Length: 257
Image (cartoon, rainbow, N blue to C red; front, side, top):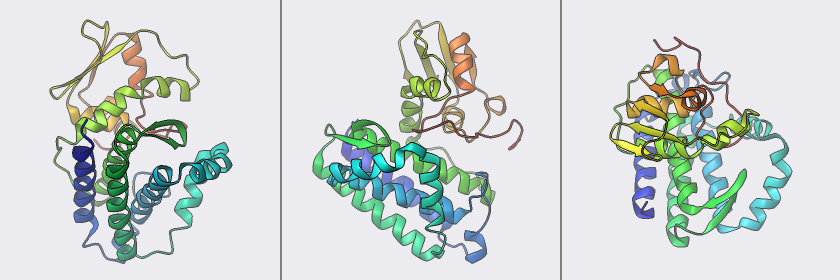
């Protein structure tokens, strides 16, 4: 994927989120989201905090590794501490932070190039993969905000990044849940996008949006039109996660019916 296109898609995803929350008053920023204990403000500051982390990983990887090695023993605690530390901010401050740090991340990514490997809270990855992950995170947390505000967002072509990352993260999903990584490949056919080998016995088919909602754990698979063929594909949909770290809580069946 062209890095210029990836960075443009990241900034476009951010712009949509800014539009979604830009007119909220103080009470609106404190609206609870489907993520237990998290408000709209928490969702936005979470994105900004980890954008800064992704930027540090690119511009000063050694310093990032030193910070990461202290925090990685408990990633959930790191997320909770980062969230709590930002709750003093008002909505205007949080929004300015999100916009500024997103633009900075895109700039440093383009300056370094797509193939340079950088550290993260897991295996090292390329700059292109890092930006792809930020697109996914922005969309996923934006979905939490949209659900909290009762807004239905129109799917965009940017979802292809989320779908690709969700498919690519299949081994991590099994490993994070303490299950052996299957040897059988899984093919994904969603909304005109295809990932995985043709002729695979295990296949997931359905709408692109539904697949993205499932791999980011924003919808339970039972509440989507996805169809899984084969035992590996069926098992994967119940634990799929496009994000790094331990398994998330996901969403309950029927929560958004």
